[in-house]
Length: 112
Image 1 (cartoon, rainbow, N blue to C red):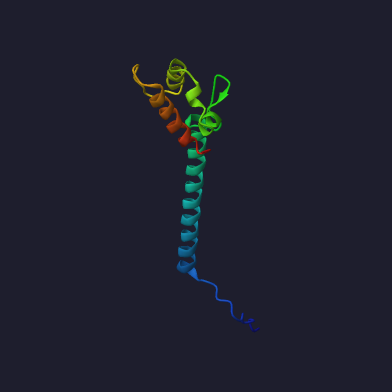
Image 2 (cartoon, rainbow, N blue to C red):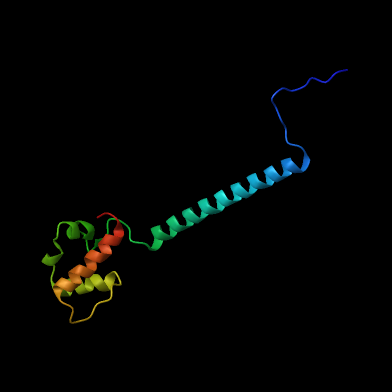
């Protein structure tokens, strides 16, 4: 009985096939680890990161900053806002300086 010869097909043999399988498994593991890492980072940013829109006391701070309306707030209110968002400030900081700190925070949001 004669075996039919396969034309143009070259199947890897023995250790060559194992090496390719191992490489495929390593590639798949790298992909899954990277995918998991990105999912983890996204989740952390979602939980602790700046999320758009940034809201304070019913105000959309992103919108207020983009429309340059933060200066309408009194300095004391801006200090409370800085305290709420854990932005460092000094008691003698001017209204302009407080406004700038909040604008910097809004830049981190990515909406601007």
